[in-house]
Length: 118
View 1 (cartoon, rainbow, N blue to C red):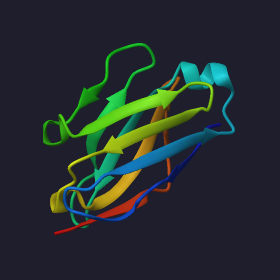
View 2 (cartoon, rainbow, N blue to C red):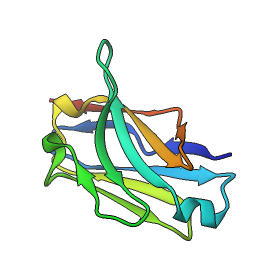
View 3 (cartoon, one colour):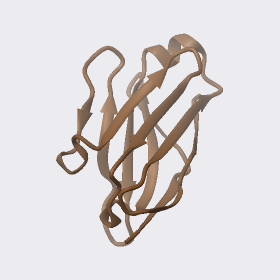
């Protein structure tokens, strides 16, 4: 079982930066290393959408609306996934969720809210 705990959300001015973190607690290292991770976001009335993903052994992938501004990374030893968000825009306001996929099972965090003020 993998539990994902996000942190780092908050209020920021447009043009500012935030770094989200997602700790994959209650997972052993080998499970973490074999998992694919991603960050999604959701606003009221809209479906959850993919922001960025990092496969277990492949290249990172980004949604077009964050390319060049956001960077996903992971620290295998800390079992933590990060989303560095730069040049934030008001339209980036959403609840951001961490996602993991391991052995055809999906795991979600509880979400962390990000508000970008204009």
